[in-house]
Length: 330
Image (cartoon, rainbow, N blue to C red; front, side, top):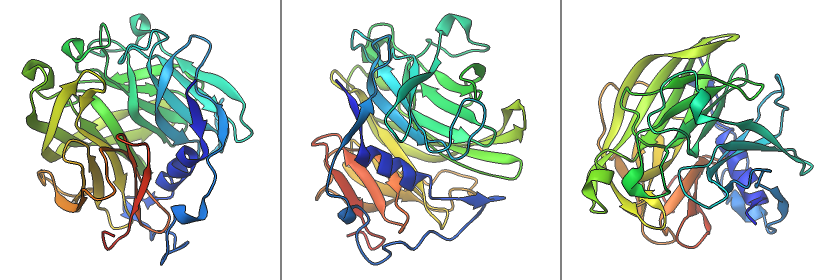
């Protein structure tokens, strides 16, 4: 039975270590600045099951609650499920919550027929999961009809309030298979960096296309009202992607923003990590960005986070290993 493991929690905490004040990136924490961040961890302990009562499986997104609000409790971990109880990809509808003590509850169970707005295709919750000020939880949906890439559709971003109810959907604007996400906020604005993997993949019927994109979505925060999209910019493009019988779709996945405003991308098909500079302020696409590292210990990198010491953490889909890349690309 799928479980949440301590290394996943460490990775999520590392992702949350990057902070922004009015979009001026704060200095990164200097813990273990000259050594390995993951080298201090030696055990992989099971904390809790990620399977809720409806049987959803395949935990994808992970986010740590930064502060208590509504039913969200500071330090709890939210996990989105991508598959339903029949193990069909792109059909999972639940976000579970795991406390530091290991207690699991359901934070949200989403019904595609009662959404407050458009979400082409329905609900299949992806790795794109983040928490904004006010406890607004944003999660990506890449839905399918039968768990196959042939029926995958554009989906949307679902905005959920701090009580677990969907308050808004964000669709269109280049959102096409939102696969992963990094978030940052300050003042009355929040920024979502979203990787998209369905630009031409389904029509290509398994063949490789170079159309994966990374969007920067700027939202206006409105207190107790749902945030609204005010601007959209393509900052990355040309990433390799294709449908896959086992993984549904493979393309640009994990995203992480460092203290200098550089967005790192786990380019899964290319088996590499790339970097998009000036991600918060650029007005055009950097293409696939600069290659940081490729091959070596990488083996289809999927999840990505920035450690407190500025190193890039990626998790391999090919062998399940967690890899740390230093700022000098070692």
